[in-house]
Image (cartoon, rainbow, N blue to C red):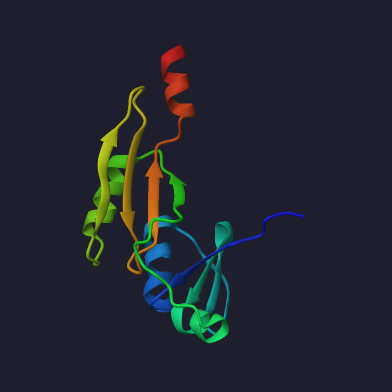
Length: 129
């Protein structure tokens, strides 16, 4: 058995597709009936489709899950993030950890938690150069 995808619930499929395409470069693989499969294994499902099939309400900003991305150009990513046309809600503003790794946490437009970090490998290489 293997894990195929991660599904997150979103309020607006089109807005979420644009968000993940513009900020993270993900591409749409398949779109049908309130579901969008994107590259890297991310699946977006419309909140109404989720509720109609489960009868369970979702809770945005619940911090029970986190999407994790790595980015080598954190300054460029932060510029892109802050120029994007949605209400940016930071959980952790840009922070540098011991050893130099940088991270930022924020919510997507539907309240799903996202973390972006610089790869740790860069810092192992830098210390040995």
